[in-house]
Amino acid sequence: MMKTLQTANELLQLDEYGRIISFRCLKAPEQEFITDGSFPAFMLQYRDETSFHELEPDKNTVVKTQETANGLTCTYFDVGGSGVDVTPIAEIIDDTLTFTASIHNPHHLAVTGLAYPMIVSRYELGAKDSSEALLYPRNAGVLYRNPKPQNLEPDSFHAWRFTPENGD
Image 1 (cartoon, helix red, strand yellow):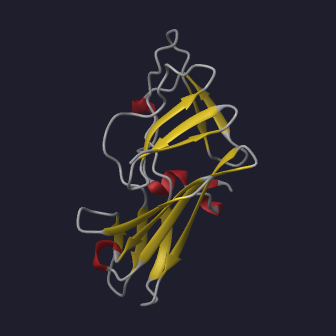
Image 2 (tube, one colour):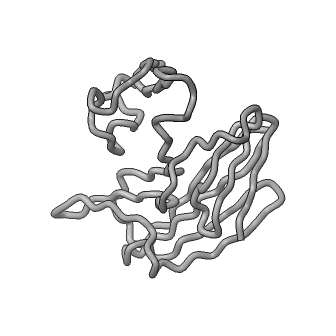
């Protein structure tokens, strides 16, 4: 099962686990914005008394998928054996792609983050040379023209979080 969500400008495809497998602009539908690969639908982070943990759904995670008129809801049960259930929702509201998620945390784990959706974008989109740009989420946003991956800080959840340390 694949779910397609379409607004006036975008076309998004999700697989049966709620993972984004295609993202295109309708003005250039031949151009794919995300990379090929198998990426998780989300990443859950929490702390316990001794360490920090990052969990993502694996092949043992039970998933219940419900297709709605406006989108897709997937509930992941007992993610990584943590006892936590995560329900990411992708839907169209007022012609806008909207992503939300809820967490059922009966063991009261100290959840520190939930990254959803997980998207890995292509660096070279096939346009003219040096036309790439990256909008970096610092303060109101910083646009880097023709960025080179080796000149950017390592990609991580912390680099993209909206926190006071990141100027937000």
